[in-house]
Image (cartoon, rainbow, N blue to C red; front, side, top):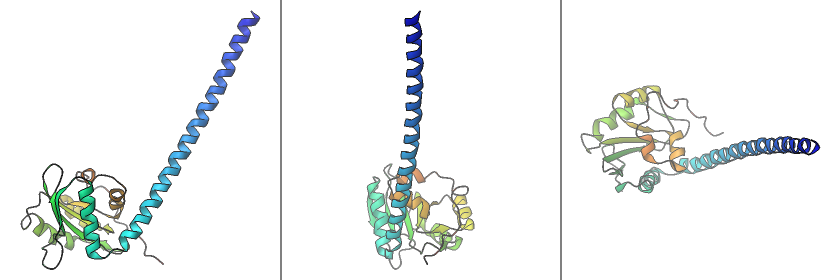
Length: 191
């Protein structure tokens, strides 16, 4: 009976110790997850600072390079005078034609509905876009998001651009519900 009692006691102690180690491991895992998320946020912010420092043509080439990274083919930077709203063209990995309008604005600005209306007027009719994509280094106004949702324009604002820059594939953004996602709150300018 003494041996049985010792075995039971050993099992209970082992269970308590194991439970404590498991809980400690979970706490450490959560802390590591939080640390990695914070590192990713800081890296994305730093990378966006670099994006905001780009010139217009450099921003267009940066977006073209992100498209290439994500498997797009026939990618060309075509922006410039008389570009009719197309700064980058190419083909998505599934073969659909993509036409991209790029706006590199200061982070405290917004892109409004008139910019999207102009792009919508040319992306499909002039350039044959199957996927019209508008990429901005700032936020879109609520009216712009509403317009984009009605006309099936894909919007990538500063937040999604940070994710795209950090490795999220472009195709992830193509089916987002623009009318319901994101925020139109402006970022604050640098002091």
